[in-house]
Amino acid sequence: MSSRDAILSRIRNALAQDRPRAAPPIPEVWPRENPSVQAMAERFQRELEAVHGEVIRCADRQQAANWLATLATQESWLRIGAMDRPLCREICRDLEPGRIWWAGAQDQRPQQPDGSPGSMADLAVGILEADCLLADTGTSMIACGRAEERLLCYLPPACVVVATADRLFEHLPAAWPQLVPRIADPQTRGEFVFITGPSRTADIEKILILGVHGPKRLIVCLVG
Image (cartoon, rainbow, N blue to C red; front, side, top):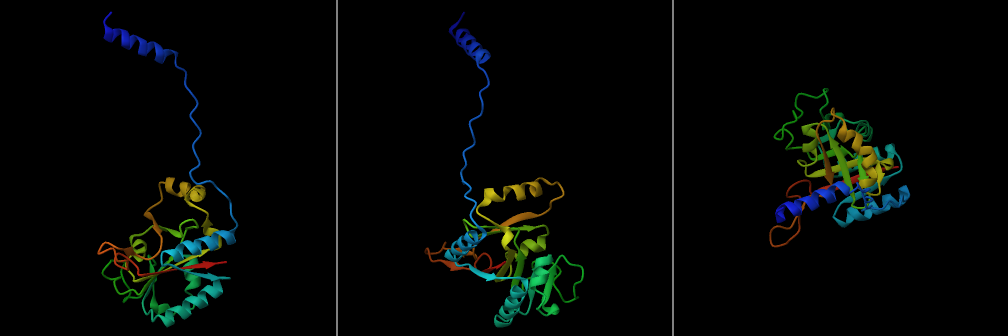
């Protein structure tokens, strides 16, 4: 028997005698501490403000609607784009209907955008509903099932994200039980967009500039 055959024979014998071993436990990279909703809201606000984002806390949806109407007047937001979702509809109820373009809605006025990037260029603000708020990074996760919803995340110079307090999670792994079924559903369309603060870049001379690749201002309205 050659040396090669002897080595291969020992390998085969070892493999035949080797028994399957139990897989080691999966390490928990982000341990769950299960903080209170108030603690998660406070951390979310700290993390987002650290990257030049803003957080507005509203006790209920009526207060949020009043706040948005006042802000739109102060900022002279004449053309507003919004996701066509129940929470967005409720919080936008005090705005003039003619100023709002609902992404994907059928009841549009003739002069409203058609969903193309060019037609959306003059929108002053995009109003989006978050599916999850991640407290550890101040991140808003938004499920965009349509192309125009995704464009609302990037094109307008200002972005308002609305969410109720039950959308808060301490970190991304804590949100997996909610997200995985949606991701695995073959009927799910579009993509999930993660937003952490306004657009920021320091490519030139390491000087921080806001608003180059997306909205210059990001406000998260947390309801409840």
